[in-house]
Length: 245
Length: 280
Image 1 (cartoon, rainbow over the protein chains, first blue to last red):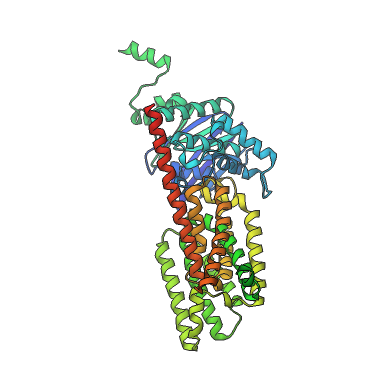
Image 2 (spheres, chains in turn green, cyan; image 1 turned 120 degrees about the vertical axis):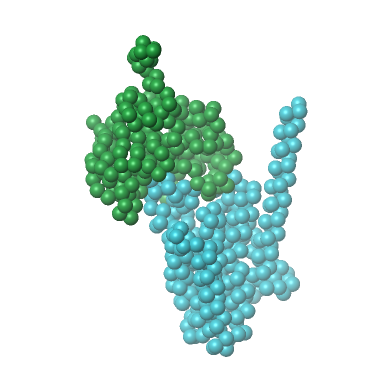
């Protein structure tokens, strides 16, 4: 059963469509990468999933017991965070807010925060100051915060921006691992090469058209071939390719 | 000397109100500084001056006019700061100078120039008994609301986008912050003066951020610091017969310099430690 279903959705600002007539379904356990050039509407689409903007027409439905405010969101970092005095624990704990109405955090919420710091591999950084962490560590802390507000779905907005290659690879590994453990992942990214390695599905947005399908079909589609330099890495295609040459 | 000081009723009143205002201002200041809203506090105090002057000219109780005017101005300034289409800081500057001009204008028309100085720079004599009671009530409201919303205020300050995605409504909490700031400024205006009250909001936060690394410790540190600085400022003011507002601001400034120096020394020490570590 699908987790999120887009039925003929058009999204835009002030009545002008940025994206028109999108229809696709995201299933539980998928790893979807949303790619496309700047201005193609990746961020707009993501905002509509988070309920920050509502579609002009069509419906976005959430199934399988998923609530819109129970999505784990990893936004791009803002200027304010660069010099914000906060411990990693305080940051992670703030992800639990969607699940409580009390003015103070409950024992359960604190435990959730601990568990997710462990999952993100930052338990030892608990009392460190957020602004003094490395870029990779900061992203892990924000990922742990995102995990606090969800059990099912993570939405990541260009998570490797500004990271060095090693930190980026570590973050990809961590995300893949979370996906293996059953969390659905939706990632907006510019890193197409990493997308085709990690993702199970690709959504490629272009002006007036889009592609949605598995990574394998994407690599064989016209839109994918135009956008990518690499050939499909799967065994079959490599064999055919070698046979052809 | 301190014992003699507290035999005067007006001094006790000023202390009670001042300490509560310092506490409120320092709590809110952390959020305002981090959200880049420091100028809102400054703008609001100028609007407050305008409101006080008009109230005095019309012979109405000053707080009854100032509270609604400043609360409305707070929402307006917040709107302007959030709306990126208008140049926020320029708009705040326009509003504050206009309000200041209205204040000076009405004051001179109605011929109450003698009070002008006390409005601008504050006076411990200015709080009447009924003012003091209202100040205590407002301060308690601010402090209680701040603690009720503490976690949400943290979330909204740290990352508005994430907060919105998890179903919090940042605009509501921004309005709560604006409302609490407005109330704090109203009660602090008479003692500190409208030109100096914004220092009470900004200084403790900036000072404690030099050394504290957790949000909670920043809040606690600025609260304590703010109360100590107010106390010291009042003692100086009483002893040397200096204006209260200015004395409090200067003690705050001194505290800032001390914290700033310590933070520089601290960085130097950790640097030399790591260098020594590498050499070993």
